[in-house]
Length: 113
Length: 113
Image (cartoon, rainbow over all chains, first blue to last red):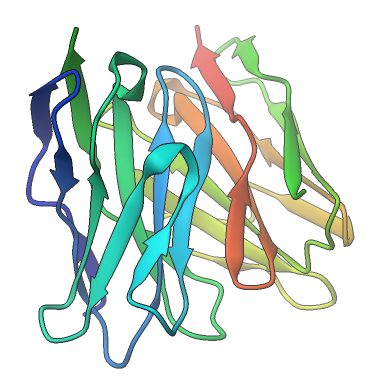
């Protein structure tokens, strides 16, 4: 079955530290992959997306993600986090040319000032 | 850029009454719109996928009789929650597809008294 797994429910890092949020997908073939961020009590904002090509994609606010077909992963990274990055981050995937997007359960990022 | 406006942002209704939420895509054509509900545990449930000029596809546990959706053109969609009860509480998110990317509105938070 198609699925997206975010193994870490909560991640706590200090401001200025580097960050990696993990995402694993289970799809036949290569899906479209996304990372969204949800700030407290708000909707979802798209951080970045991967369709094909360069496996490292750049997003907003210094975020990037790397697609790995061999590992079925799409981990999100940031070199230096800011306290304002505290939010819930969702990894999502959809099948090429399909409109059903499946979400992971989210990772709550807490950045210590 | 691609923007999705969703309103109202918050609504409170009495148990057994109904409420309607609306979603508008600006800057792109939303051929498909997905309605999600986010539970208090933050997980996303896909309610239905609506494509202009096609039948609306409801997911298991969601029905047209409970969540009727209208998608009359490429920029607008609405969904009604009929006979709302406590279990219908949550954040309802409208996602509009621009190409293969899903852009979200800010959500409608439904409280039921």
